[in-house]
Length: 335
Image 1 (cartoon, rainbow, N blue to C red):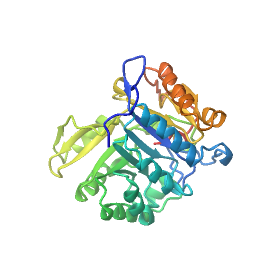
Image 2 (image 1 turned 60 degrees about the horizontal axis):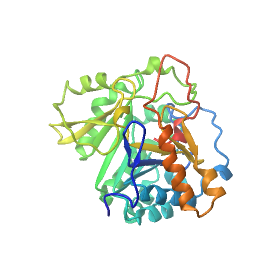
Image 3 (image 1 turned 60 degrees about the vertical axis):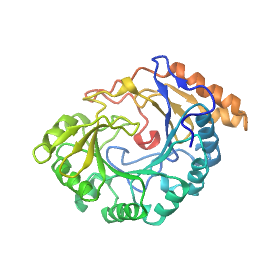
């Protein structure tokens, strides 16, 4: 695979080069995680969703503009009909260095092999609890045994890297931090702990009260493990530490306590075709309108993507003590 696209790189007004796109292919999910969705959700009408062909076209445009990494997310991306075709189409693009996936793991027992064959190299699997009762409480409807089976299937398939993602909420699952690290380490997997993102209105809990900062998680881990800072990166916002005892890594994604905006190299495409220039802002460009108004016109599409760089903000302004100003939920934005 090539190291860069065919045309000039995407550079914003702050000198940051965008080479990474995260794409939500659906806002629907077979779970209802309390930090991601409200209990009563209204989903995007299917007619307003980008088609798989439209997504593939947009990815080709980004690849031509220097993007080298694409992550497919949701909702739960693997419940979208014919999703493997999209992975195959994107996996054929020579300009991309990496095609990755974030999933809740429930569909991996039947799809892991096809995903690897399509070109997926790395998978992030969401896992917030190893206790079936607590897992059901956090996901509202999730079955822990299906996720564990999915992790086993992914390990057996032989992806280059499998990582666990865990959102820690105070007095909900903060007592499982050590157990989650042990679980990942025993299987040779890295793990990232994520501070809850204040996206959308949720009725389950007070986000400020449930906030458990990365520094507290790190302190908990250092009671049992030796953590050594590392400069390694996967192209995302995680700060990584090597865990000496397991020879794996722990990452911290800390939008509140350790803002990661200065080095932002990514944009997000929502399931209905909004190109979001920042996770925590509403600056966006309607790429669905472009691809449907000018079908097949790659120049128009690339022109719109290039122009979007001028409105990419310096960073987010998350405030857990305030009411949400971003009303879109995480399932629409993509994890």
